[in-house]
Each structure stands twice: as structure tokens, then as C-alpha cells.
Image (cartoon, rainbow, N blue to C red; front, side):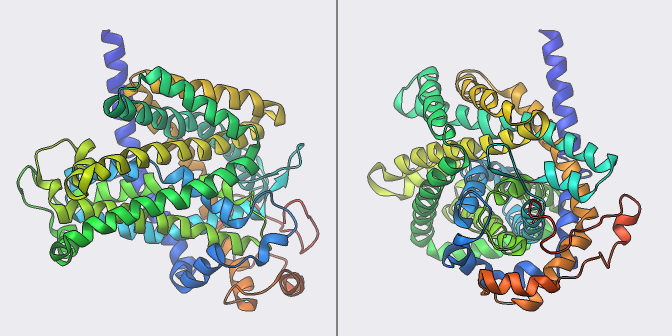
Length: 498
């Protein structure tokens, strides 16, 4: 018993250092700021064009390559990121960092869009086709292909190992446990029963691979986001007189900290900054590399176009879903009450939505959010496993995935949380290195594409025509010289990587 307690304390310490204010948080935020500057605020300049392309433009549907539509790839990425943290996690952030943490969450989400764009661009740019005829891409491929030496290969293998393991925590056990605990508390269903049913449903979807995952997530994600966000807007509207004071408090407290109010103990600016940045990054996964894996499966006419579609995922997750939860907690005042953070959102919904409707919306939201996250991360994990051992590892991984769903639903997860937090941190590091090294390539090809199609309205034939004049050699390769000399394929030279 003493050994287990000591081991748990060690895990907690390592996790707190990796995800603390002096290591991974500034690295992720700094990379987002760097890419935002290098890409000349692409997330602002192309905001409306990116949303139109993601939700209304179907021109890329007939593009060569890819397994699912651009929207299905976006839905898969959203499924993996919009989880129980959007309902419960943000309450913990406000409880610890105060309303000011929401401001830093917004800033992080905004610059994180540039990181998401870059990793999605690279995911498509360096994707390949596996033995089953499916597209595979993401950091596990663009690190090795974009940095073609032993260093790039080492980064690729490291990311693959850490991501395949981390997936069982962030995308499996934690989500399955959230569903089981919620159903046991609210409906009296035994966790083992919830786990078995959940594992069967997950297994049925995974049998169809990314095509099946894309179909399911493209149906689930819009429904669950609209249901939850719509309910939040109703509650915010019912407390409309508190909306302007809430927004004012978010901005002012971001720089001054929050004084003790009601059940809130007070916090300083650095605390608000730390928790706001950490929650945003943990939720939208910008810079973690996972978004590039989903993007690589999309049918798209050019990497820039899927990069634009993918960066809207960060906006939806952080600037819409997390913001709605935050404003519900602040405008209703529940964040100041002496109640556990885990039930803050449920308390607000139960109090302000009549007839027990809020109670059921929270239950449905948690179940759907967690289930969709399990599907999204199952795909990420199997793609990384395939990179390590080949296609033969996919089926065993899927079977193990379903078994772990049952395990996560039935056991306490304190130690699993700490181990997976560490694995998540370790998978981020090789991806951030790759994003920085490959930034010149992303910037150069983005500039060339947008110079010819600034409104993202070109059709497939137009794109093929103007891409024939794409520059061949990397012009801005200062960041590359110390690590690798990248020879980029000429347009049309290597169809596998295009």
C-alpha cells in the first residue's frame, strides 16, 4: 500500500511538472503564437471562407484520395475533442482560476487555430495509402517524411508510441468511466453493464473503420453540439441581465485575478492564466497532433483546404462549446456556490431549465460526448499502431480498445489519470518540434495556394492547373538547416504524398 501511494505521488508530481506553467503550457501556447505570426493571422483572415468550406462547399467531394468527406473528418476530430471536459472540466477551471481563466482560454483557442491548421495541412501533405487502401497520415508520418533523417524517424516513432498508449486514457478509460459513473448515479445502472454495452456499440462502429466512424460522428456531433449549446443559450438568455457583467468580469479578472466571492477562495492572474491555457489546450488538442490524423482521411483537393476546415474545429470546441458552459456557470452564479466543481454545470441546468429537462440534457450530453470521444481516439490509436507494426496490428488494437472500455467503466481511475496525463504530454513534444521545423514548408505552400485561390472557391481542375506552377525548393529553410535538408517533391511527382 505504501509503495502504491508513493508511486501515485511520483506520477502526480511528474504530471504537474509536464503540464505546469513552466513547461508544456508555454511550449504549446508559444508554438501557436509563432505559427500565427508566420501564417500572418490565417485563422482571422480566412475565418469565414474556412467555415463556408467546412459546412457548405462540396466541391472537394469528388477529389482523388481520401476515405471520408471533409465534414466527416472535421466531425471525427470534433468527436475526439468535444468530451466530458466541455461540461465538467471547465467548471473545475473556473472554480480554481476564476472567470479570468476563460479569457486566457479564448486567447489560447484563437492562436491554437494556427497550430491545428498546420498539423492538418501536414497530415494531408504527407499522407500515404496503407495495405487496406485507406489513407494514413498525421505526425507519425509527417515527422518521418518531412524530416527525412534519423531524427525525424525517432520523432515519428516516439509520437506513435506515446499516442497509442495515451489514447487508452484520454480517449477510452476516462470517457467510459464518465459514462458509467453518470448512469450509475442517475439511473442506478451497474458500471459493468454500462461498460459491456458501451464496448459492444464501440466495437460495431469500429468494424467499419474510418468510413463507419465518419458516418456516425457526422450524425452525432451536430446533434449533441446543437442540443447542448442551444440549452446553454436558453439559460444565458434567462440570465441576460448578468451577461455584460459576466463578460466584463472575464476580461478584467484575466489581468487582476479574482477576489474571494461566496464559496470561491480567490485567485491571481497567473493562476487564471495557467488554468485557462491548460483547459483550452487539453480540450481542443491544438498542437497535440491528433487533428492531423483525422484530416489525413479527408477527400480534399489540397492540404491548405483541409487545414482550413480542420482549424474550425478548435473554434467550435473552445470559442463556442466551452464558452457557452463558462457563461452558464458565471451568469447563473453557481461558480461562487460551495458545491463540487463536478456538479456545477448540472446544478445550473437543473435549476434553470424546467421540468427536469436540464437533468436529462446533462446526462445525454455526457453520454454522447464521451461515446463520440471514444470513437475518435480509437481511430487515432489504431493509426499510430499501424505506423509501428503495420496493418496487422489494427484488429488486435480494436479488440483491446473495446476490452479497456469495460475496464475503465468498472475501476477507479486515479492512477490511470496520472499515467495518461504523462503519456499525453510526451506525445505533444515530438509534434511541437515537427511543427516548428516544418513551419517554413507550411508557410510557403499556404502563401502560394492563397495567392491563387484567396477565397477558397477554386474547383479541382483550377487547383490542379495553378499548382503546376508551385515553387519547388524551400525558400525559407533556416529552421530546417540544423536538422534536415528537405527535398520537396515537385507537383505531381509523388502521388502518395500529395
